Image 1 (cartoon, rainbow, N blue to C red):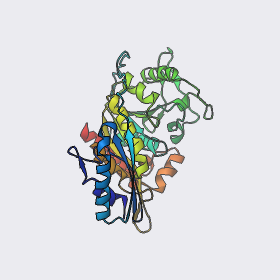
Image 2: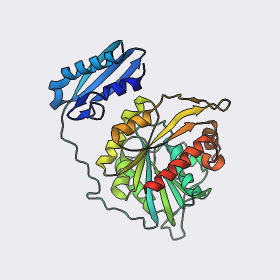
Image 3: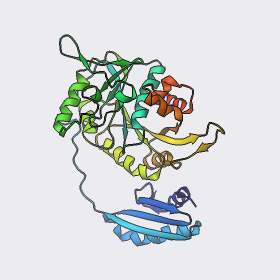
Image 4: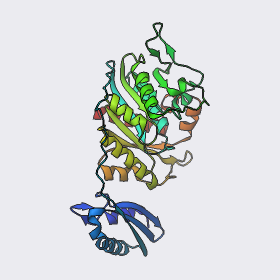
Length: 346
């Protein structure tokens, strides 16, 4: 028995015209052999139907072949939604020479978001566009490392008005990692970050760009709010891995961007599978189908699944994006397809 089987069964249980998964009543789902554990997340105003739902879920799962069903229920208190100022009192800064600002985000760290952001920028470049990348993670910048720019520093024009970004393989690169030494910690409060973010984005001489790819830090915090409040963002791509535990974090990130009124263009499933070079067989190391489940839950399209291969890590360690170094390997082909899908959407 699998979690996919359990999820399909649960989608047959309806509440107010929606299945309980789409309605957000499923808090968690765990399957071990023929045992399934379901955590229900019931809104306070629907608490009176909790017992009825438990009975329906138990009957459906037992009829579907599961031998043991454990159901836990959590009641969500109904609180007024927090007021989030988006543009509000903040001035929206125009970058007249940048046509499209495209952000790459994730709900949690360790999903390969920065690796994807860098390679997406170079995929656009390979398709003939003028591209820049901005690494906005002040506490753990990694783009400068992945492009072997650790010894580079941001320069200033002769008049002292504009930052001059270094260029690597035809893409302009700005990173907080170019402002401080590699092992120097940055201890800033939110207001300081907001000001630095504003100045670095708006006072950089980007030249003429078709795409500016912004690599956001994980979660929902200062960087996400500053980007939404200060600049006209064309859209954001959220990166996840296939396992169910990653989905909850990504859902929070998606909801955060909705409150900030930033369009989520699509979902990217990273580390989706490993292709054995000897046999060509796919191995789903981190589970299977998480990106599709997330797309079904949110209605946001799954733009593509990027496999794990030896080239993507080795090229990053050597400071060359995989789409530049090995354009014909599975990971490169997947990223190029995603870039082409984004162009069609825009």
